[in-house]
Amino acid sequence: MPPPPTPNDDALWRECQVAARRVLANHGWGLVDDEAAFVAEVLAVVRASPGRSGDSLARRAERATIHAYCPRLYAACRAGHGRRAAQAFDEMGRYLHAIARRRSHDPQRAQDAAQRALEAIWQHLDEVRAPEAFLGYARVVLLREMGPHGASRPEPRRFVPLRGDDAAEEGVVLPDPHTAEAAASAERAAADPALRAALRDCLRSAAQREVIERLFLAEESVTAVADALSTTPANVWVLKSRALARLRRCPEVMLALGG
Image 1 (cartoon, rainbow, N blue to C red):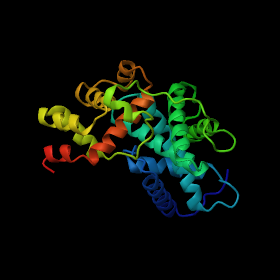
Image 2: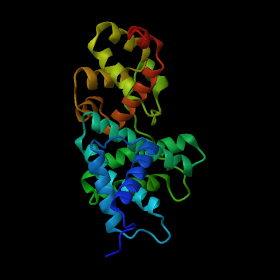
Image 3: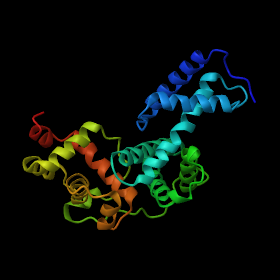
Image 4: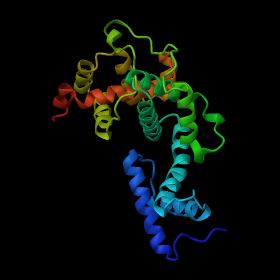
């Protein structure tokens, strides 16, 4: 059994708390409901593992934070619907896209690979045997999609069938992360006829409008929406996130909201 990194439990707790807060903030991870319980998990991992050679205590605490966060991310992805699942897929999308952009000089190829990896991860969630290593698994899936030289494989992308004014939306890719404010705007737009009209004016894509209305108004699950659109649940999250990102910049919706 390795000796504790510090003889002072309070100091070790504070080190783990600082590291956990730093990692969660840097990645935009928000699935921790009870900070004290989470830090206790991080602390337990730090105590149980000697870490890599040369690792500082801060670095060990950062790795332990990722280790403790992965099961929460995995559980939220498996839920398949609800706010936590939406947040989990947004976080996964950002994580994958960031890795893809670091490995590819072509932004479009990076986005393609990240989307395909997200879909593949969704389809094989039941095969994950170590939830505490979920992000490592996701990274392996992404690298497989990108190939040995960091270039996304040239397979055709799968998209929701689009019609009419949706032609410009072909090539749906991972968007910038949306805010809780935009999600709240979508909920209000679904509940108020005037806001629904503004929503229609703002989102020219019929696919995006249908996803927003089904998720927020009809309160359908992601799986149900995916079945209705003949696409994958992961792509439903992509469409939803892209729509919410646009709502943040939409003056019609902001005006209807009184903003």
